Structures are given as C-alpha cells and as structure tokens.
Image 1: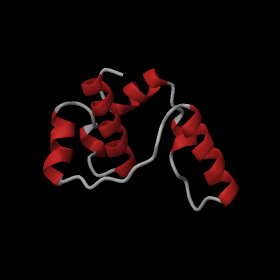
Image 2: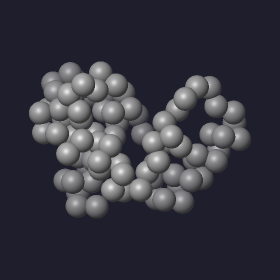
Image 3: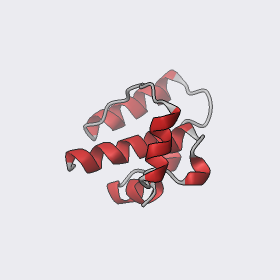
Image 4: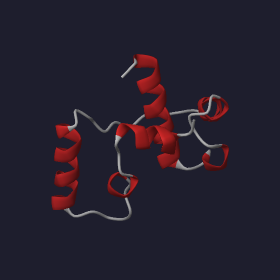
Length: 86
C-alpha cells in the first residue's frame, strides 16, 4: 500500500498539496487556511536514509520514489496515521 493509495483514501488532492514552484503570499495563506481547516499542520523533520529505507520496506513509500521528498513526506504521514489510528 503506497502513499498515493493512502492519500487518495484520506481525500487529499496531490495537485493542490504539492508545491510546484515559488508561491505568492496569498497562495501560501490559502494553503495554510485549508490545512488548518482540516486540522493539519506543516512541520519539517530530519529523516535518515535508514528510516527512508524502512518506509520503503514497510510499503509506505514506493521503491521507485525513495528519493522523492514529497513521496517520503506522504509515507511518513501514512505511517503516523496507521500507528496512531487516525
């Protein structure tokens, strides 16, 4: 079960949530409000290559996307949802 399946189940639209280039202040604020309305927060974390490999091995990240930061972020989110039961 890779991140795209999990993301689809949670109702996220990848095209709206993934940064595609420099954003205007108004667009950043819209995204912030949208996330806040869904009860989400944006955080930055440090993750080791060993941890990324574990996400791939456990099926949270597709093996072909192990170097893609967005795929890893969705994998971490999916893991958290699975572990915390939300």
